Amino acid sequence: MVLPEGVLMEILLRLPLKYLCVCKCVSKTWWSIISEIKKLHHARNLGIFISNFGCSSSSSLFQARLGLDNNKIPLFKKLVGGSESAEIGFTQVINGLFCFYTQGVGGVLTLCNCYTCETRNIPLPRFSRWTHKIQFYLGFDLSGGNYKLLSLGSPRNHDLVMYQAILTLGGMNNHNITIGSWRRMLPFDSLLPEIDVLCKPSLCINGILHWLVECKDNKRKILAFNLLRGCFFDIFLPAEIAAAAAKMVSFKGSSTVESLAVGCLVAGEDSVTSSSKLNIWEFYKWRSWIKHSINLPEELVRCNREMWCSFGNFPTGEILLANPKANDDSDFFPIYSYDHSTQKFQRFVLGKFTPCMVGKSYVQISCVELNRSCHSLEALLLKQPISALQFREKYLRIHYVKKFKEI
Image (cartoon, rainbow, N blue to C red):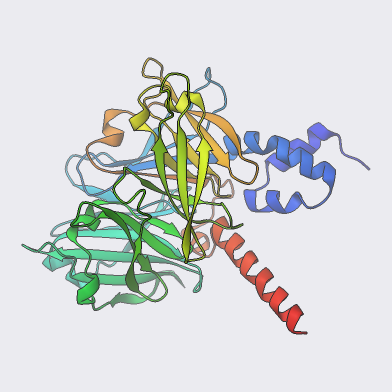
């Protein structure tokens, strides 16, 4: 029995992204159908989460679906925050999980399931009482298969991050969702991060947290933290972008899995008729930087070129690029996804940001699959991000190839 194509499409649209990618291998017919409905699937099943980074009385977490039609523009709705009585801060949203926290005496750290709004309090690290500034960063450790929370703090009247601790999440006890307690790390004098890192959100790629920071010579570098080994290290940028207005992004370029990349917008020779290019340097196999040039859609750069931004990634790895001020006279702004394997763009729309959404602090943006199954907080902690599954699949493939050659 052969299902009508319309019925098959409706069934496939209800599948999570992980299984949708697997179904492309069934047959050429399924591959072509899934390729065609991918844009519609993203618009129906993916949501954008945006929040301010750093504690503020106006900080909030907003969420909206992606839209396809300028006449049906999805608007952002507030999920958490906005209370003027307390300053609140947020971590990045990863696979539906995020943390929010308040600083000062009586501060609280809370883990939240964004699908069900289920929350659970987490104990603060001991040094929180001695710091004048503390921040939290959520990431996923590929080797351990756990979500981990990094805490950094700076003592009073000091411009270095002296306090560092890490907490593993995933305990199944009803009264405790952590594995063990906060593990204090002794900082190395040569790699003490400056307090500037506490003002910027991190980007987690393949079990490593990354920050784009400025050096004393006004140039930029990437500060990285390995969630498995619990240590900081530096990644130096190519000379072409060390002093440029660059931005970090997760990028599927020469590799089949996500890797660190840094993008820099370059205007064409004729700013009127020539579209701008986005130069992306991919950090390839921890050895070298590979440069890619992408011609951007005219809508992103025809006005307010300096406002372009990396809008994060789809769970399957495609880059999201946006310009919140591309259409100042309309009530929406365009978002384009870019798939480097096909070198094609797809266009989506979102409602305009409100002043309280951006404020004066850095904005952190995540794109997450909107889960209809409503997993509990404990069950969600056991689910790996799609990027982690893709990384593990590649590792196993390479491992089996080596074993086959040895045989």
